[in-house]
Length: 393
Ligand code: KG4
Ligand code: ZN
Image 1 (cartoon, rainbow, N blue to C red):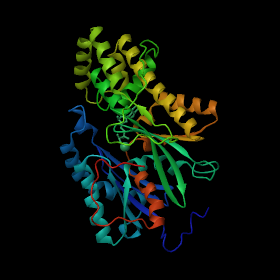
Image 2 (image 1 turned 30 degrees about the vertical axis):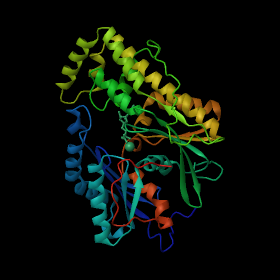
Image 3 (image 1 turned 60 degrees about the vertical axis):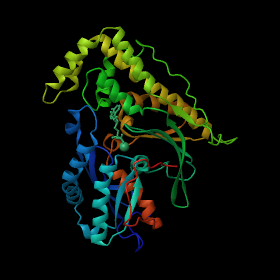
Image 4 (image 1 turned 45 degrees about the horizontal axis):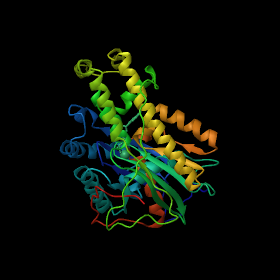
């Protein structure tokens, strides 16, 4: 593959990516969808932590404050200037409308002022490209013969399964699974909050789970069925079965467990103690949890990962996919990585995850997803708007 000598239209292949769909303001410079020259993320966690979740108005305000310094830092770290860029890529959705608008408006003005093309990227496609960006070399997922790839996008806002395929230089996606209620990351965050742990809860549960017994509380997942609504077409005969996830039941089950086991006073004490610390660490949280709480945390995580695993591998089998990629914030989870890797090995399925830095929201994934669109001349106009409920596939 020729990585160095681009055709004239390719320029040097430098794309500036901008991401502002939720609570991270991010900018990155990526060369030819492969080489990350810089990746800057300004997290708003401390702003939202006080409220136990993302507050949309505060997110927009923080994006406005951060966007210019974050883009400047991305260029500086990459050692390039605005004139060196070949295109500006930005997340168009899904996400918070006001948050998305900050990135889109800035990207549009930049593209206009510099006379460079503007590329609109779906955030979910970005998460998939976080893996493809790093997955190079022999047997890479982009190599012919690897398709279809099954992608599990599992984050605070999404639990989606896609079949992804590169056709004539463009990526095509087909949605084959989704959650009917909460996203998996949302369940991690809500259960953590319920147990008096800080926001966002996923990393805290990940850190505490190894101290508990994952078999202590037997959480069960029911088979999810959706009714075909009146006026809606029934699924095609012969169509791939859709995988449905549901994570609101387990959150309620944890709440019920907490109530019936009289855990509320110790949870309030833990929340107050951790809330009073400047920068609480996992060890502080472990010290504030009794074995019953640690068992509950371990059992919750074990059940969620088990459900994601069973349904994802079943979907891979149904679709005849021999390549699997798992991406999004929850893909940072250690138990998830270990169990998915082992299952993939036993089934002879190729599996890839993003590095930890690219698992959660970032702009390198946006710049990487923009590269095939740049090659195809698939540019956005200045009328580009935020699409908070944008779908993929
Ligand atoms: O991809 P992301 O940064 O933002 C969205 O697009 O939603 O994902 C954030 C989500 C949060 O729910 C967070 O708790 C979860 O990913 N998360 C984790 C871990 N790290 C982040 N969940 C479980 N284990 C982790 N290590
Ligand atoms: Zn995301």
